[in-house]
Length: 346
Image (cartoon, rainbow, N blue to C red; front, side, top):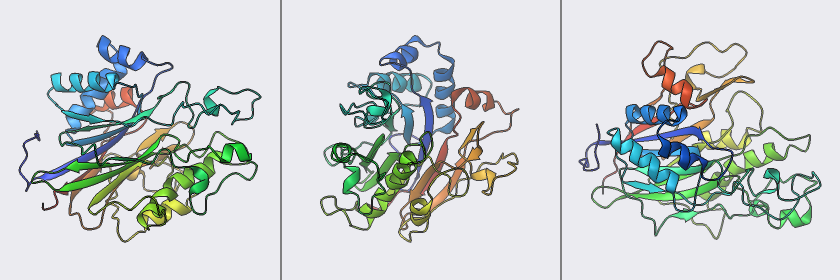
């Protein structure tokens, strides 16, 4: 098992997983973790121990102000033999009320009237667990960036002016988290969790927003956001894009442009077990989630910058008879994705 005292020559394993640990109300996730009897939480812990990543980005994890739930999960992992001494989360946009009737149902204050859909503030946020420290003073939270300020934003034509004036782009968040490497180097993690491009009407508000949440990275990396300088190389872009490059609904221009960038590399993490998925165009081995309505989709991405040397990559998806398969099924509809890179020289 890797440890916090790794040598600089060793590889670094980065993992991303939408754990779907979001609950119906505030404090319920912390209660479920602390109780020690929740089947989903138990399954998540077992899978994360087996995954044995050095750095974990968890999406779909409820945020609370003091990171109580995050601390309880870290305690459970440490007790199971997988210590993560560093944890970090910015407050998400999910459930952050705007005071407007954004969803047009005639009243304000509902889940669809928040900056990002949520029954309460913090539902389904993001969490970083790491064996490497985060330079919190240099961390950047882009989650307050207004949708209308994105160059070429695909705002819905019928969006009222008062909504345009306050609507943030991020449905959950966009972060730049610098990791402090052995020897004093730095590796920036660019993390995000986009809205699904469905669950709306012909105005395609969610489809437009999903596209632009990915397009934000194109603008940032190209230096087209004057107030937000691009991150220094090397960096890793990772998150729940909630859009398959080949299958399912959504606007694919931004994700296609992201995957084609010469300053990024797509390791195409694949599962050793991948049942056939009739009707899908993409390779089922690349799928990171399976939904009853759509089948398998590749909705999570880990894209290291071009100068980083890859050691390996994969999707933790197992045949039904495998010992960990039941835990994967109990934990989430998504599968963990991992990429292993060489640590950059200090």
